[in-house]
Length: 276
Image 1 (spheres, rainbow, N blue to C red):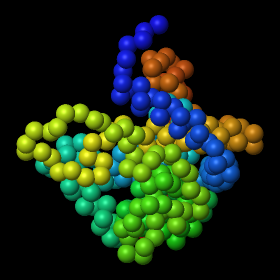
Image 2 (cartoon, rainbow, N blue to C red):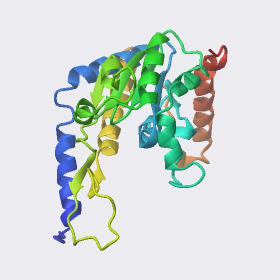
Image 3 (cartoon, rainbow, N blue to C red):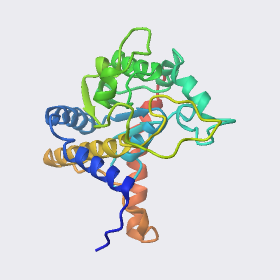
């Protein structure tokens, strides 16, 4: 067995695993309520919508479309708020962060959909304070949707509200799920030699790395996915699962894929029948 010292990797692993082991503690009731809302929505031929900015988009796509997903989950991924991998230049991070602060933007997104009476909205944001996040949650509630938040409770509680209303996502949501991330998200402080001039600006989080929100968030979302699938089965409703893409070429798998596509299209079609 290898005993090669990996100082930073070991520290991150130990901290992350410790947080994961405690992730369900204290929020079984919240997960139960979230699973009940999602199960009721999917059982009634409704949808559970997922929305997030920046890296929170990953949590949306963790649910669908990917291996193990099933019909009933629907991502609302706005490229202007998420496609900033170039960092600078066209579609850069500056523009994306600016759009997150733009009042009224969420309403323009929501107007594209005719939400159903049983639909649910999951809004994902580690900080839980950005303007578009608050307005997305409030806009969903105004349309009659129950709202589930996935955020960092530690960070959201101490963060200063950005929306003029003074509200945070945890103030708006019907159910709050905690991804377990610390204030600032990153777990590790990295020490090293003095930075030669010209030195970068110093500030909170300047020498920290190892974010946890993706790890914790993915765990929470998959626990929710599994719980909802089991509850649907318990009601005698078999979810329409996406088959493994790894076996594409098999006639059976191809037929299963086509069935999944058809059932997904059928489920989301009412969203576009009468836009707001």
